[in-house]
Amino acid sequence: MATKRATINDVASLAGVSIATASKALNGRQDVRAATRERVLAAAAQLSFQPNALARGLLSGQTRTVGLLTSDSVGRFGIPVLLGAEDAFGAGEMAVLLCDARGDAIREQHHLRALLSRRVDGLIVVGESTDPRPSVSKDLPVPVVYAYGPSEDPEDVSFVPDDVGAATMAVNHLLALGRRRVAHVTGPTHYKAARDREEGARLALEAAGIPQAGQTLSGPWSQRWGRHAAEMLLMSEPEIDAVFCGSDQIAAGFVEAARERGRRVPDDIAVVGYDNWEVLSTETRPALTTVDMNLESLGRTAAQHLFAAIDGKATPGVHKMPCQLVIRDSTSPPGVS
Image (cartoon, rainbow, N blue to C red; front, side, top):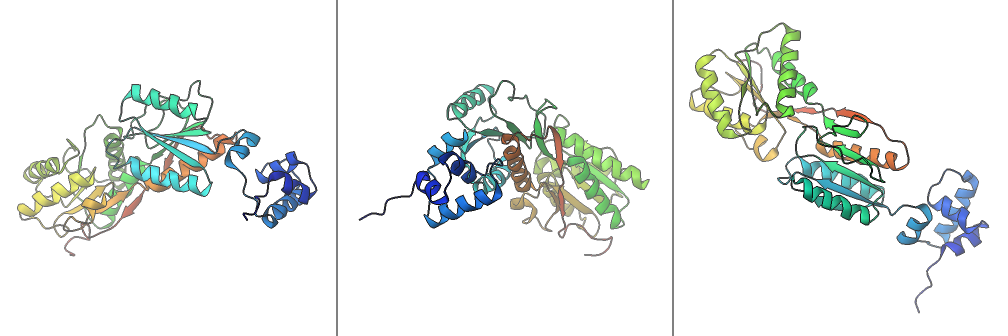
């Protein structure tokens, strides 16, 4: 014969409190004395009480579900952010509803309506690039946190990688190795990420009093562009001894073309990439020193701040998250392989 499941009435009765007080204690509400909370939790443990999610939601006014809305149809940047967020939500026992708008504003509105109809407690909106995106927060009944792609509204809560700081760190690494003819090859200038990485490289070189080798070269985020840029640089600036690339794809193409022209990496030219896309960064020969944007950590942080926003403690503004330099074989002091 099956054992009857304990109810909140049973917990309240054993703890000697009202059902309302038992509910508050089990939901972690602050307006319950510590001794009373301990008594209720002890009673719940003794009875092996498992609160029904729907009942708990009705009592607390929350459904313990959140929406994740992404526009990154490729997923190379969005997926790590989503994994980090889901990790945090799992630890907080929140159910996650994922929707992909595929960069389509109409589809995004459709998904927003669907998520709100399911009474989610909050939303994380994940961008497809670090370019600011239109806010969806206005008139929504739940808090929203933006990750990777910030909201255009400074009153919203946004978390982005610190591209300027990371690029400064990458170029400082090259300078610390004794490299003095540092070039920069990056992606299309209409991307904020490309502009920020160029700015970070400029700041590092200015602080060291060292002129950049040639002009910044901008093109597609591709290996083909990296190869083409290497050909142009090695003709126009044959003395370069280092290059900071705005993506791992560009860096991989640069390494390939440099090798074809008899330049050894890192002996003759040290190369730093960006993104730590391990399909490329660890498989390139030599393996790439590169910037890791710590996107899973960014996603976890965004989720934790969504918890705070749900509790009425929002943190407005664009928060820049630190990146990390992953040092591999494509950089070393001059003449050291």
